[in-house]
Length: 346
Image 1: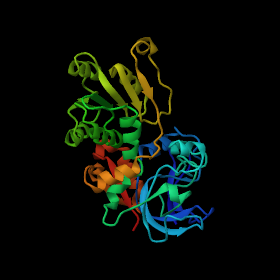
Image 2: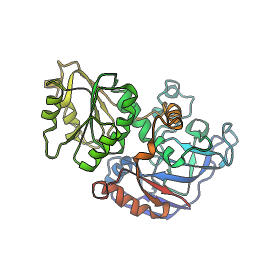
Image 3: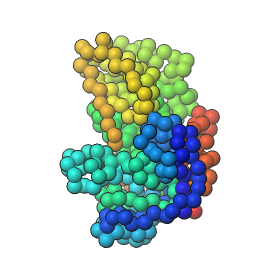
Image 4: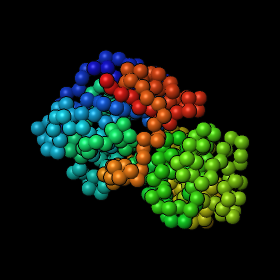
């Protein structure tokens, strides 16, 4: 089969790889139908996740059709259309029983990280009963790719950890796909204001159509002064970091109101400065989280009922074999006006 293979920082190759096979009775082999590229994949290529080794197939999102199941799989069969979760969970360990699937002792975030991932024609899914979701007939499978990772991530790590409430002022730093996912799902809780902050006017304009009440281009506007002017010099009740750089996290520290929450989503490859000289007396809560995907079933229902439309996050489509071109588009999102790209295995 063909797959995108990582060969060290800055190096990747679309090449021939062995088709995966059942290794344990709880495995399933899925033929990838549609997949995508995540900002985390770009962090891997930058060298921010050194545990990803030479020869690893990248990718942790997608939908497909089950090709084969192990003898221990009871919830799925050959031919089922499935959504692949970015998080693999055994369902039995201490962390899984706490609902912390991201810290599963036998899984967690392993696809495209510690085991081969979904940017390939086929993928092996361990613990298939707990790590796949059946796609209801008639669903928009392309749109459901957004439920593999970014929508549950934006919702769980940003909105839920940030404790967004009715009437709150929410500031989201980063209007890329993950920030927009947080924007979409924050509206479940009717905040009074959602302020989107980014360097890209195109993404900020998209954020307005997605429900942002205010947008700030921090390239040419002092974001802290603007947020303070919008909030009576108080700051935001919830600030969501959706980029993963030291400068954006420090911006979040400057934006948060007394008693507020900073919810980190971004993948950080470098240390950040924690300004305790300001925060120590301000009753601030800082949260971190790797998505657990515990909300995926609920999000599936909201998509089916058309309360949530993930299709609007997709801007570009490619054949899976054109993955190099897709990466170039995604890496130059400002130039290409790209959000999420869809790769179809035909």
